Amino acid sequence: MRQGSSSGGATNDEFLSENEEKTRDLILTLPFFDVMLGQELDLLARHMNHVALRRGEHLFLEGDPGDSMYFVVSGLFDVMKKTASGDYRTVARIGRGGTIGEMTLLDKAQRSATVMARQPAVVLLLSRKGFNVLTDRYPAIGIKLLKRIMRMLSLQMRRTTSRLADHLHEEQE
Image (cartoon, rainbow, N blue to C red; front, side):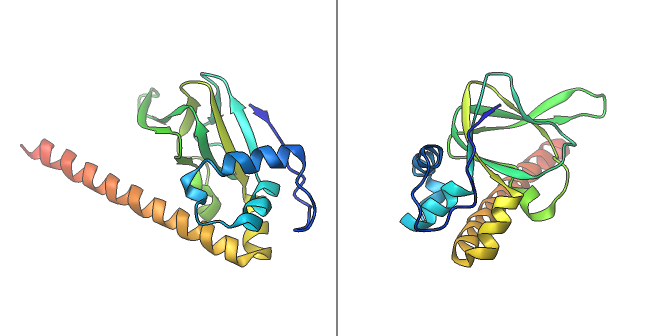
């Protein structure tokens, strides 16, 4: 993974570094951040990084410590679970506008799946440290982030429940 870094220590009235400006530009491309205002976008850019991945490169492995979430700017990712036999099965594909690893910001658990770039990709990384700084120092941003994450998790749970119900129905027939 090739990563751009942000200083994380800048104040509101300082100019963004070149890397932070690129991060801000990438943030602006994602619907997840539509609720953020100008100054909030600058603060996000200071506490996030952008990462480029090559095809076949792992974002993380199942069982890794969970310390960040990712926002997919471009590319496509396979989410794979290890089966009882030790093989991997693709359980989801996540593309532009999707998020990866959001549960770990909330529950601090290990990664529940392996995620691999199916094609060259760019993601924005929000570390737990950056998330905590944003939620502690800038509660309005923290609330917006948490509301968006909770909404996404709720939608994912509804989809999973529907898929499970369909699967159980098929097994009974």
